[in-house]
Image (tube, rainbow, N blue to C red; front, side):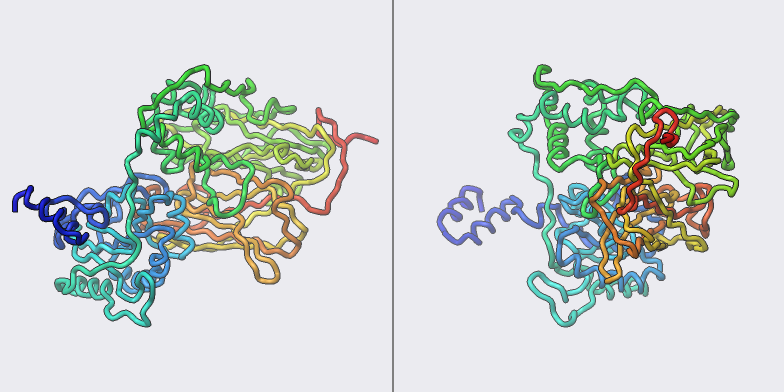
Amino acid sequence: MKTKDVFWFASSVSNALVFAWVFVALGAPLRGEESLGTKIPIGTKVEGLRFKDIRGVQRELSELGPHRAFVLTFVTSDCPIVKKTFPKLSELHGQFSTQDVAFVCVNVGLNDTIRDMASQAIEFQVPWAFIKDYDAQVAGKLGITRTPEVAVLDSEYRLIYRGRVDDQIRLGGVKPNASRSDLRLALEEHLAGKHVSVPETLADGCAISRAPAIAESNTTALNYHEHIAPIILEHCTTCHRPGTAAPFSLMTSQDVLGHAEMIQEVIRDETMPPWYANKKHGEFQNDRSLSDSQKEALLGWLASGRAMGSEEQAPEPPEFEQTPWRIGTPDLIITTLEQHTVPATGFVPYKYVVLPHLFLNDTWVSAFEIRPLNPAVVHHCNMAYATSKGASEETFITGYVPGGQPMDLTKFDNQVAYKLPAGSALGLQIHYTTTGQEQKSRIQIGLRFPREKIRKQLYHFVLDPRGWKIPPGDPAFRISSEHELARDADLLGIFTHMHVRGRDMTFYAKNRSGSQETLLQIPNYNFEWQLGYEIAPGTKLLPKGTTIQAVAHFDNSPFNPYNPDPKATVEYGAQTVDEMFNGFVFYVDQNEILDIDVDPKTGRVKKK
């Protein structure tokens, strides 16, 4: 049929189905399932499947290691069919993971972030890998159009099955039983060396959406000086400015344009500004993350022509105090006596140092900061006070960790301070890291004393279970610990510390009636950004007898990009190749009113 005849035929009938058929005959794709890509034939070898893991690292399917089969289930965080299918997937995983079948969930949610994706693994307690498929690129290559549709690849990455898990759960209803366990049978046949008898089935579920092209009208109204600079100056320049540890400055428009592609990537992945708490649980006064509208504006401007606008509309750049100290100029600075030599290579045993200052009287401190003079070689440093009885977890004060912040209690504005008892001295546990060149190191400690009366003393406890062993290859080894509050507590902060196998940690508050609240969830823990999560006073009050529980998972699998040795059984240890579980909780007593006056120059109690 010639083209003009086709259009004459289409205009001669009123049946919409015939009209649609005509467009298909002409090769014009209909909007819908096929818009994600042409369905590749069963038996096709699939190459170039790339995605992001929960840490925001670019990965390939081969990095999962060799397996007899790969089960890729496509999911979103809000599709109800996906949620109902997780128990089925868990059952299948229990049957086939011991037969060298790798399970993977591929998140294709248009509005799902990497953190949302990581949180879903915790919510449904599944141990396999979750990966992010931006713009449904992987789905398109495999011909996947719905969630929770499944693609099964053999050991050579050939597509051997595509379709549903089974036909029990459908849009609009659920049958009492599945008429056929399609995925299970496909795996059993493949593992038995047979051809899959039914290699393709019709998948029911939620249609996968792709991001529309950004319309020019949506971006032409945005310009740097008026709309983008305020966001950059508020959220980025605290770190990204000259004289800080950040790798480059973002103080000027040229700085931003010079790093535009990297900015676009880290904003999309939510790795910058650094913040790792799930927004669904808890509110924190030091939340650095962008709002949805700020993120949308930045990504829209970066994806457009990046108009600059008029400099007259630019905000005034922030002014920063000219001091190397983040707590402001300290009232007391203590420097380590010994200068340590850090070798060029190898592991350096922990250094333990007592600082040369004895606190003869009870001393109240409102801010502490650990400041390495050569930060390149200090991975982390913990500080506690020691008395004639020694030091312990109870005498811990604060630490210097990657991406962390100093302890500045003035930010809580509730007249809280930390008490150093008479006769104590400060001690450091220093973890040095090598840089390829021999280096020298000294560390300074800065203290700032209260300027107003003290009403509250800072208390804390540490959840630190021992005696566990993480098996080789385990992708989600679970450890938990809990503590019962001995006081009516007003929570001020939560901090977690694990090493490179740490995957996530969640803190719960359980009262005596049995109800439970999630205080903080860190679904994709990052060893390089160990943040403290600060809670505004009076916003999280927990009565005496409340149990605080922390639950963490550790990824000792080959797919963990930072795993030193997935074949090792891992136990507690101070070195990074070992593991730790530390859940710190800081609080004040709701009922305590101290009314203490101190000398702002020394932190000592004033004599009446």
